Structure formats: structure tokens, C-alpha cells
Length: 448
Image 1 (cartoon, rainbow, N blue to C red):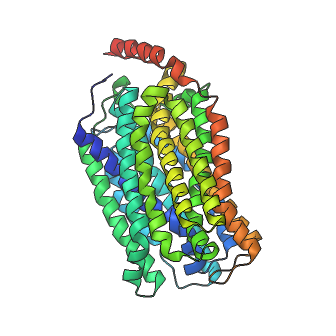
Image 2: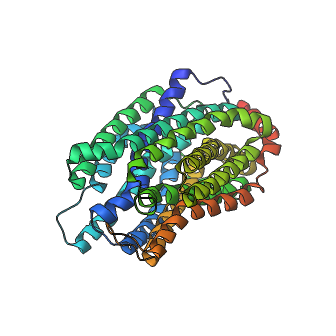
């Protein structure tokens, strides 16, 4: 066990892994639905089904990848090698996802299924090691929050780059052709992502190793899930959190284009995601004062208040109030996102204490199952709601369609926040944390 502070260079490099993930993930979350419907020409109902089916199929890869991580044994550790092995293949698949083949609509839909599912698998295979690396960098719960804060900041910088620069870059590269614009923009972002993953690989270290870093048998790993109530709570919190994030981000293009007729504001509104850094930076300090559980609840409350302000501003046609609401909501999301990976890392310790098995790869990977389900449901519900409202791409929308878009942008995220708060109320791990760490320290010292 190593409770020493992680060096600043390593913290920054871990954070750059978050930047690499969010540059590509941000493009998928924010623009892929619009790309499919308004650029590739797929029906919104078909896209909704695509998101759900792809995420359900894709969800099964997370536990498998987690087991692979736990069974990996190299001179670089268990998690770090995946950045080296998969950075370039991941970048290639990301580019293919934003490519429109010269096929019929059914052919383009099949292509979308294939590339989107493969992207999800590749994203899990390179992003899960970033999560499973956290409990191996340090055994200190508070230091994990600090290190994860660097990841959060790095991720928000990546989102800011995407949300602020994507549409201007699409216009610059495309010169009126959105297909070319999105393609070349994704080539640029994917290239940056590859370089940043290599930096993360080079400059991070796995210090917390148990049993000589030997592979964990398949059946043994699943023992760490049994009776791990904190992990199960955070799994479902991930579902509702990513319904909130996905529905809000995917609907931004539609809401400002059709409901407000202010497409010119989209880069600015999307660029406000950088303010998640405010919540992310505040997370370590607040968690020390009021605890991680209460800080997470506070984040969801602030996000919900922001959504209500957005509605008030939109209804009154007062853009400043809408912007204030967006700023408040995004800051609250920063608290939630800034804590969840560190809290899931704590469940790795809890699982080892409860079952005797330390399986960071499986536990961090299986928790991503919640992320994928949330993304799938958020995307599917948004698309199906718009389809039910009668959405037709690139046309003036009916009142029912505008209400559907409003539901996706304002009310669905608010529902996700409320359900998350209810779940987190049952999280009690912090009360046992000191006792668990003392027991594990004695256990690991005895192994040396």
C-alpha cells in the first residue's frame, strides 16, 4: 500500500487520458445523433433503435474487458498497456464512425450499426483501463479524488475543445459540405486523442499491486461483486447520470436550431461545458467538508436547479436566464462526474474487504455497464420522443415536435437527477472506509 502523494507530472498525464477520451466521446455524444439524422439521412426512429440496440450489445463487452484487465500481467502493469496497444486502432474506428458511405439508406444504417458498435467496444477497451488504473495509482481515498480531479479537468478541456471548435471546424473543412466537414474534424480530434493516450501510457505508474500482480482467475473476480452494495448503487447512478448527460448534449443542436431559432449560439452553449471544471475542482474540497456522498447529492441538486432555470429562460425568451441556468447545471454536473470514478474506485477496496478478492478491472469495467446503458437509453428515449413528436430533418417543426425536443433538453435530464439523488441517499460506504483501509493495510503488509 502506498499512501504517498502522486507526482504532479503523473496527475497531469492521467488527466490527459481524460482529455483523449472526451475529445472522441464528446463528438459521439454531442453530434452523432445530428450527424446520423441531418447529414447521413437516417430516420430519427431508426437512430433511436440503433442507439439502444448497439448499447445493449456493446454493454456485454465491459465485464469481459474488465476480466481481461485483471488477467493481464505485463512489465507495465495491468491497465497501462492498453493505451499503447489500442490508441491507434481506436482513432481509426472513431474516424470511420463519422464517415458516410455511398450506399442506400438501409446500407448506411447497417454501416452505422457496425461502426457504432465497434466504436463502443474500442472505447470501452481503452477507457476502462483509465478507470481501473486509478485504484492502482494510489491506495489513498482522498488522493484518488485529487488524481481523478485531474482526469475530470482534462476531460472537460477535451469537451470544451469539441463543443467550442467542432462546428467552426466542420464549416472550415467542409466549405458547405457537412459530410466532409465532420469527417476531417474527426480525423483531427482522433489524431490528438492518440497522442494523448501515448503520453498517459508513458508517464503513469501502477503502485498498488496485490499477489505480485498475477492474473485473477475468472470466477474469483466476480466474488468482488457479491454483497458490494455501494458498487450496485453507483452502477445505477451511472445509468441515470448518463441519461441526463446524453439527452441534454444530443438535444442541444435541435433545441437551439428549432425551438429557439438561435443556431448561432450552439458553439457558445456547448462551450460552456468547460465550466464543469468548476464542480470538478470543488469536489475534493467539498468532499473533505461534507463527505463524498453528500457532495454527489449536492451536485445533482445544483444540476436540477440549473435545468429549471433553463426552462424559465426559454419560456420567457430570456437568453441570459437560460445561459445562467446552463452555467449552474453544468457546474453541478462537474461535481457528480468529478466524484463518481473515485467513489467507484473505493468500492474496489470494499469488494476486497468483503470477499478477499481485489478485482479493479472487473469492478471499474462492470460499472461502465451503467454508463453504456445510460447512453443507450438517453439516446434512444431522445430519438423516439422526437419521432413520436413528428420530427423531420431540416424542416420547420410542428408544436408537438418542439415539445418533444424540449422534453429531451430540459425534463429528461431533470428526471435523471431526481432518480440519482434517491439512489445516492442509500450509499453508506464512507462510514466504514477507515476500518476497511486499516484491515487492508494489515493484509497487504503481511503479504510482503
